[in-house]
Length: 260
Length: 230
Image (cartoon, rainbow over all chains, first blue to last red; front, side):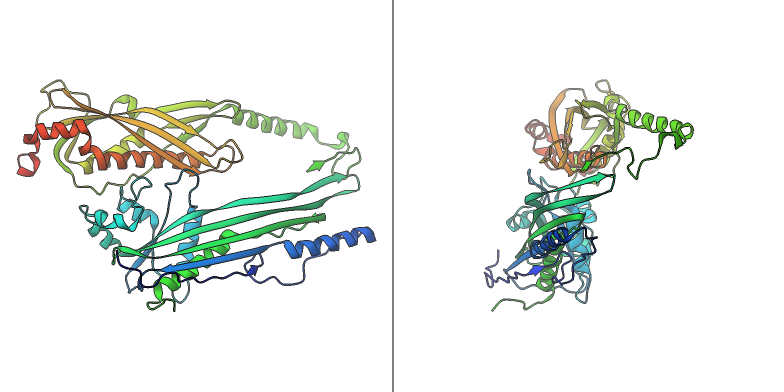
C-alpha cells in the first residue's frame, strides 16, 4: 500500500439549493382564489414560511486523495454498489445516476457496465466475496484468470459506492376535504431527507486505494396548502449524485489535483 | 384525505339518470377481477442467465444428476392476511448449475438417473444437487424495504461406485429493494441473487470442504484429466 501523498485534502461546500438544484429564486406561484382577507393573509404567511423553509438543501462534499490519479485513453471506470450490509443497500439507480453523470461533459469518462463487470468476474465481486479493502486486491488479482479478465474489461478504476437516501424527520399535518361548494386542502406538511454516500476509488493499476469522496446532502421538503397544496420537494439524492460525480470526474481526470 | 359526500355534490348525478344497465356488467367484471386478483397467487417464475464462474477447474471428471424434484421445484406459500405466492425455480436451478459445474470440473456429463455401482465409467465423482429449503419475505411494515429470499441447496457427492463422499449444504441469501404490495420483480431479483451467492460459495469452496478435501487427498490418482487419459 503506498503512503498517502497528501491527506486530509478536504473540499467543502455548503450552500442552500432550490429543490431543482438551482439557487432559490423569488416569485413563488400564488394564484389562489381569495375568499376573504383572512384567507389571503394566511395564504401569504404560509407561502412566505414555505419559501423560507422549503426546498432547502445543504450539501457537504469531502475529498481525500491518497495518490496521483489520471486516466489514459482506453482506460475505463466501473461504478459498483456495496451490497453486503444487512440494514441498507446502495440504490442501483444512484449507481446509474453517478455513472451517467461521469460519462457526460467535456471530461466525460468511459464507464463500464457494472452488470457486465460483475458477471465477467463472477464470483469475485458478489456481495459475499467482493474485496472489502484494497488490501485484498493483490490476492484477488493473483487468482487464476482474474488479472487477465480485468485487463480485458479495460477498467482501471473501481469506484465503490456505499450509502443510502433516507427520510430522517418529518411533521406537520395536511388535510383535504370535499364538500358541496367545492374542495380544498389546508395545513402544512414537511419532511427531511438525508442522502449520505461515500465513494472509495480503487486504482487497479497501482493496486491500491486512490482516495475517497463523500457526499452528505440534506434536503427539507415542504407542502403548504391553502385550498391548493403547493409542493416544494427537495431532491437530495439527485444533488448528491451530481456533486459526487463532479468531484469524481475532477479526481480521476486531473492528474495533479492534490491539495496544497 | 377526508372526503365527504352530499346528495347535491357536483360530482354526483341523480341515480335515475345513470345508465345502470350498461354499467352493471362493467362493475361486475371489475369486481370479479379484483376478487380474482385477491384469490389467485402471485407467481414468480425465476428466469435468469447465470454467469460462468471464473475459477480454475478441478482436474476431475464429474457426472451430475439433476433429480426431478430439483428440475420441477416449486414453492407455494401464503402470507397470512396478505398474499399468496408461487415460485418456480426448477429450470432456473438447472440453468444455474450447468455453467457452475462446467467451470468447476474439467469434464462434466449429465446423468439421466443415478447409476448403479460400476455402471458409469470414466468419471471420478457424481454430484447430485437438491434444493432443500426455500424461504422468502416481503416488506410488510413501514420500516422494511427489502424483499428477501433465503435458500439452501444440498450437494450429494458420490464416488463412481456409489460410496458417499460428502453432503454439503450451501445457503444463499438475496435481497432487493421492493415497492408495492406484490413485489414480484423484487422477489425475482432476490431469488437470483440468492442463487448467485450459493453459486459463489460452491465455486470458491468446493475443493476445501473437509470431506471433499480428504477424499481428494486419499484419491490423488483420480486427478487424471490433466495427464491426458480423460
